[in-house]
Image (tube, rainbow, N blue to C red; front, side):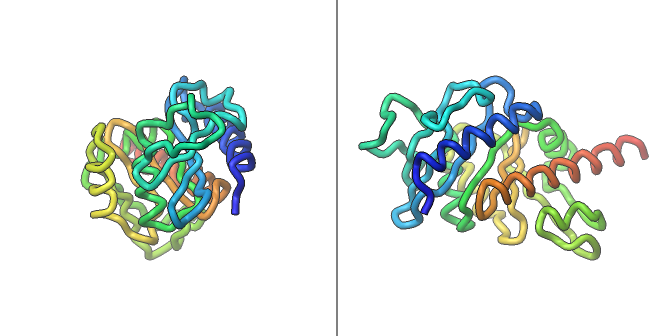
Length: 204
C-alpha cells in the first residue's frame, strides 16, 4: 500500500515533469494515486498551485466522490474540482493512478474527431498497451462540463478496459495505469500518436 508521504512525493515529481513539457501550464491539470481500494481513497494534487513547484505535502485525500476526507495532514488544502472524475475512473478501471494534463494535441484531436479518435498501424501503440498492427483503437471523446458526475457517466458509458484514456473536448486528456509510471508512459505515447494523426491529416 502506498503511504500518503510516498504518494505526495511521487505526485510532486510527476507534476514537475509534466509542467516542464508544457502540459500543466500555470495551475492547470491534476494527478492522483490510489491509497486504498476499499473504501476508495485517492491522494490528489491540491488545487490552485503551480504544478512545477508542488511539494510532497501539496496533496489532498479524497473519497470515491472526490470529496476531501476529514482527518488529513493539510485540511486547509482543497482538492481539484476534477477529483470526482479521477475517483470515478479509478473505481471503474481499477487503475492505481490517473493523470490529467492540458497538452495541446489531445484537445486538437478532440476538435477534429468529436466522436472518437481512431488510431491504428502505428508502432507507438504498443507503448499505449495495444498492438502495433491490425488493432483499431478508438480513444473516446466526451463534451466538457463542470459537473463531474455527468462527466463520469459519459466516461463510464464509453469505457473500454483496453483503452486507458479519455479526451475531454476543449479541455484536456485523462490517462490511467497501474501506477504513475505506467500512466506517464501511456500518456507520452498517446500524445505522440495524436500529434502524428493531426499532422498527417493536415498534410494530406
